[in-house]
Image (tube, rainbow, N blue to C red; front, top):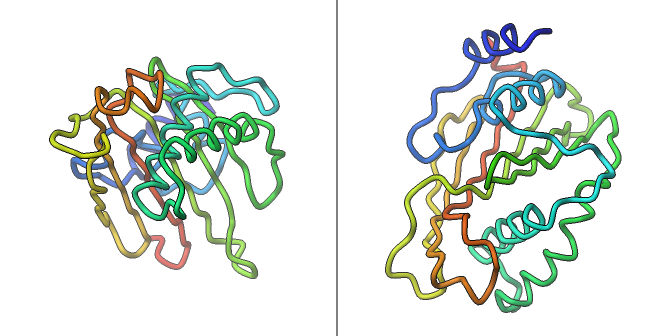
Length: 204
């Protein structure tokens, strides 16, 4: 399938997202089940997937570690400090690129300029192999920075874009000056996560 054909396909199937999701690639919210088509769409949007098993660039490790740290800190940090979570994520992130593809789960790390993303594709429900879940988590230089926060990041903004099939987006704005002690990453200003569940029961 050519890049042009992929673009036409996803233009016809992507869910139109409001402001909180517009920094995410179209593939993250598209009504498309095929992993290879989605990955090719990401490449067409300028995202470069890193080969499974490759060594991640240091800047990508730092950005993805920051994204995971802020995400977990905004939900349940389990009594750990931000620094402790960040140190753990720096050790965890390099292993993301070493995960082996299976029929039920695939993951890629992608970069584009100063942005980094984990792209997860899977069939999480046993006995329902027709349901596909796509999760994108992105550290991006796009978006507005937070202001007046105590720890350097704003509250989570959730948007349910659709219920059936489910499309959900979350964005957390950062204050780079306030997290300078936590990370060397000075480019990331927001963390974006999208969840898309493609269920044939709701296909039109």
